[in-house]
Image (cartoon, rainbow, N blue to C red; front, side, top):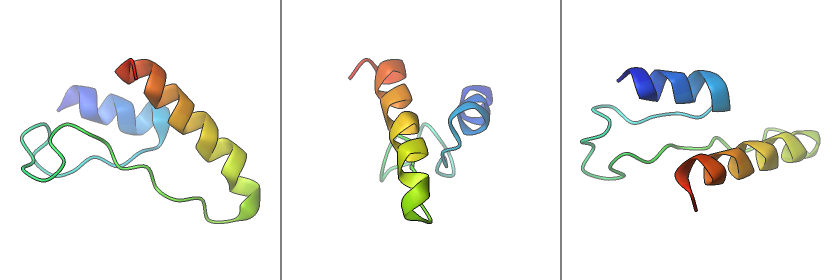
Length: 56
């Protein structure tokens, strides 16, 4: 639970209820879509940062 809260704070992502035992997405995080076109670069930074954390 603490790891999930740290990821929410650092990467601005959403985590499912009952993480990491969520039956639908397991321990993955949900990346909210950008609200405007200007938000796309920031969203890409978040995605790239998560790929590094997950070793993808």
